[in-house]
Length: 362
Image 1 (cartoon, rainbow, N blue to C red):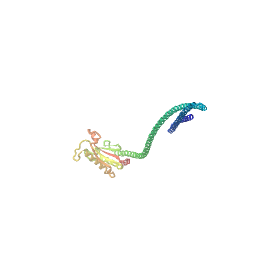
Image 2 (tube, helix red, strand yellow; image 1 turned 90 degrees about the vertical axis):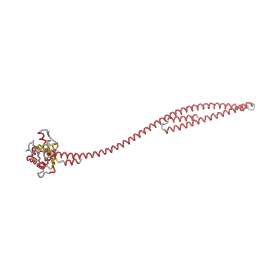
Image 3 (spheres, rainbow, N blue to C red; image 1 turned 30 degrees about the vertical axis):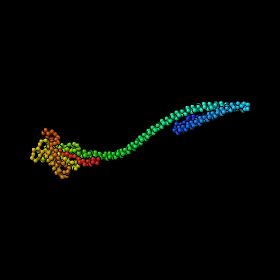
Image 4 (cartoon, rainbow, N blue to C red; image 1 turned 90 degrees about the horizontal axis):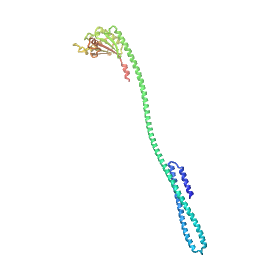
């Protein structure tokens, strides 16, 4: 019995020594503990059986003692039996003492084994509890990591979606950039065309200015001036060259100047002409002319009639307008200033239809 207990205890120790942390091994260890507990209970039961046997033997000894007493009373007839019984009694006493000693040994061994097993079970239980807590902690840690991985997975999915959206946006932007580059090339082409046209316009305006200046060399600077401003040619004709005071009839010298200008413009079909009449701020005093507005317009129409009189000058190219006293170039408070304000301006500008056509393509 003692060897069996030692063998089971050795198995228990080996099982605990090679125990593992996972839950499955823990359950195996618990099953082993249950089996050891069952074996301990069986050992206790066997010890109890031995105690029962000892009690039976003690009863038998008591009965034998009674028989010995009877035999002693009959010493004469039962001498031989008595000696045998004494011998048997001695043997039984020796056996009894052996049994008592074995019982004591068994009781001490069982108590020591119970105490040792109890301590080992307590230690094992504490170890199992510790491992259980470690497993729970690891389980919690794994759960936290799982949640963290799930969060990272969601974050990664969101980033992948965002990246896909950005890739689509990038593709759209690349297409947009390609379209913009094509538009830019077309715009650059139109700009080059515009620059070419503007350069030609500036060159033609400069040439036209020179042609008109050459045609009007016989006139004095106080009678007329030729200037370029804002890409246009301004031919400013003084009142003294064209009209008498308050008149709308063009003098012969002024007619000559207008015909010279018309001759040059006849060769320039892409030039538009605006004739603007200007006056000073002295009110008109005439029955046929209402005011300075009227005077400036009538003078402009008189000039237009002379310039379009020659065949070949397209009347659609010229506009007659009157500005009255409202666009002065000098101070009307002086005589010289008023004289400068009484003028007619012939404004020559290139036809910008081609330029507007290019701009209309934008």
